[in-house]
Length: 160
Image 1 (cartoon, rainbow, N blue to C red):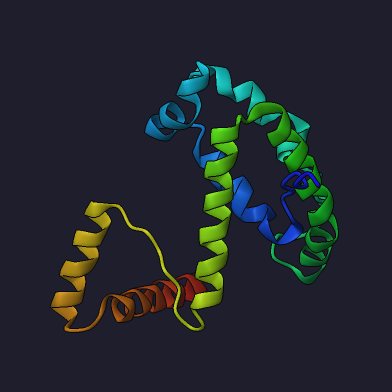
Image 2: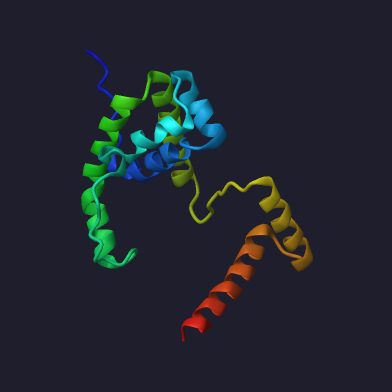
């Protein structure tokens, strides 16, 4: 019996879209699409296709609101199916393998960490954060909390 084709599920939709979106520009574009002879300027039309963008959420909904989340969750399976069809049309087997690996790693991260979340920082950001942590005498995570708390307090004060 033949193995069924890979389908991007609703739970994987956001991660798959994020991964593919990141392949559009710079060094990643060259690595991911270069073997197929596609270059950055040739990728734009592919990523503008409706199947990649997915179904549109109502513009009347405030992003992050309960109604927005409800509509997003309702449309996510359809969006995942459209993205799967887009991938079948535009990705070769090596690109599919990379996407599936990305999804598998993301799922593993999600299940292995309860309260901890892993992030990736560029070297300059890491150095800056490390220096701040050293100055404050706390961990990287505590430094982020400390500085973001100040920023949020300032933003909240400006709104009032």
